[in-house]
Length: 538
Image 1 (cartoon, rainbow, N blue to C red):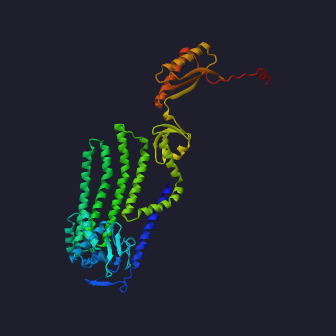
Image 2 (cartoon, rainbow, N blue to C red):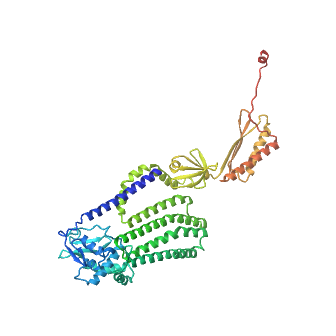
Image 3 (tube, helix red, strand yellow):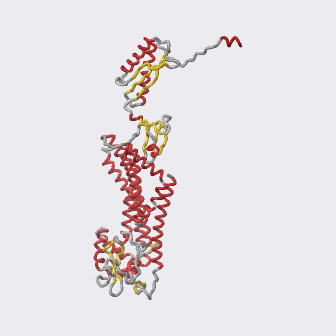
């Protein structure tokens, strides 16, 4: 199992690493292929800086780079929008709104594959049109007759609609406000002072919201569950959910707030990715802890309302749901970080043969578990005998079955071994058999033997837990040193302790009967004959 885990982690990390390297190589290729060639690309000058709209790459970077902290020129960023349709003030607002939309979608200059072709053609429409992201099909660049690339008139008309659907109604006023205070503001650690104050305020508000939400969650759960569930389950729910749930909500809130601070691309990208990581991990923990509470709730309903739930399914159900939760959590996390989950799944499926070969025993045990829960040869609490091992079944797990022996030790058996071997389920017996031989001496008179045998039969008939319809008491063998009486009966119980108590009662009754009748029990004896002639010769 350990080797399998190492192999799985290695393959997964290799795939992820390959994906990261592929994206990194693409980014390097884009950066290296951008020559800043003033002869090949046409550059313009405004506010003391140069910009270009000669390709989709240049138009996109002109828009975002000149709204960055280190090079803040909103008038230049507005040039990415066609001046024939909008005023300079409106174009500046559109530039900021679109930047916020990009941030909300996780679109940054670092993770967009842009074309450097001046005459780029879209394969689907066969026009000079470049869509920024598949997540924003309505936002695209078009090439004007002058050769400049701008956001299309349709796209600029959609920006406010998308912005209002993404952010609350007061966001437009806030955008206008922050675009004004950004100019000429003081800097601290390379960040504008108002942004530093904003980060501090947001951090304090999130901490306060965390503790208030934690308290509110406890109060709400107490109100909802106190009348229906025991206190132990209530605190089990609170302890399992409060921290990951709060972190999930707060990280999502933080991710939503970050774009409003209009930080530089590098810092904003780092903070948004950090929020995604915290969100993904918190969600994974939340999903991972849910199966335990789900199974606990099923067991609770089964015990209280006689709900039809096989309790022995609990371990494998819990393990299966946890594995499913981890897979979903990892998939969501990778999706949030920008990885193509479909390609990753395809890559893992290619390595599935290697994993299956390395995990043959695990696969066999898993199939054995399915067979055990399908056929149900035994359940938790049954007394079974398998592979020369006797004991009580304590747990049927995802990979192994735990049996507590009569020495009070726990033996762990792989499920593949259990499914492949013959299992004697003594726990499913309706009756407990008692079979023995009673040996009496050869000098016992015939009449006493008859009375003794009939007396044993009466003991069986009169005992409350013996079967009167199925027993045998007969004189049946002349042994070497005794007359043997065959005694065969069943006790009407499936409890080991009751069986032993009943056997003791019957045996004591037989001993008392022998004492009353004067019947002696035989034990192995041997007669030794000595030859007198041989003694005299010596």
